Image (cartoon, rainbow, N blue to C red; front, side, top):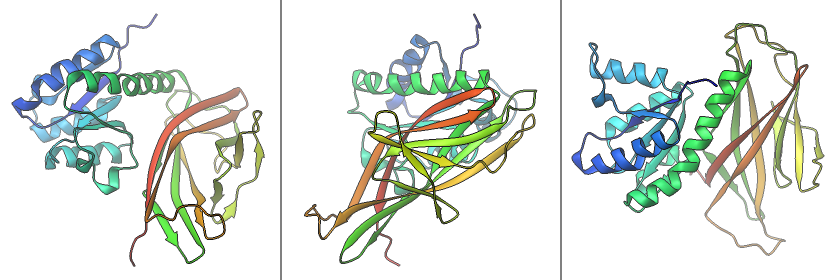
Length: 282
């Protein structure tokens, strides 16, 4: 059995008020799950602290960021981590501390107690650890990014859209198997499109979901190569004829399953998604 332990880099203010939250809520919890969690002030290094933060974000398997108090350094570092495609779990004691542009990323709102934080962060760490181990064992790995939701309101309908970006990468030293198709499972309220054309779909085996077919833009990946698929999600939230409640904004959250059918088998990934749909006044 491999002795490798995933590395979680923790971003938070250097404030004594967060000491117990870090030591017992994050670091101890991570250790119990065989994950190494560290902050930059625990490490020895010769470069500048900002250079070290950059390096550790890049070297990390995933990130936990304490957003409480809207610390500008933490916000900047989280932005860098997202730009590098890192999995990030955002934690906060107040939902108001999660900016609009980050509300669609997974986050935990806890009541300030270590017990509440541990209870909510454990499944997040387990999921990120599982995804890390999956990436290290497979030649094709997948990650996703999603945009903020856009709400379009008319007298008769309210529609929401957001972009779902699927990144595929070959982390192995061999050429990947051929990618034959990509399937994205959603509830039936969603319509998926690529480059303006609706994606074909069929009901899944349970008849409760739909399997949307995405034709891959690249069939095989050389070592360290990547490809990207941009899919638009669209759904109706309200209709004048349905009798549903009309709202100024809507939120959708759940698990999106991505299946990558290859010549050597099918890879399956579950991605938690939460998107807030707000009308932009211009």
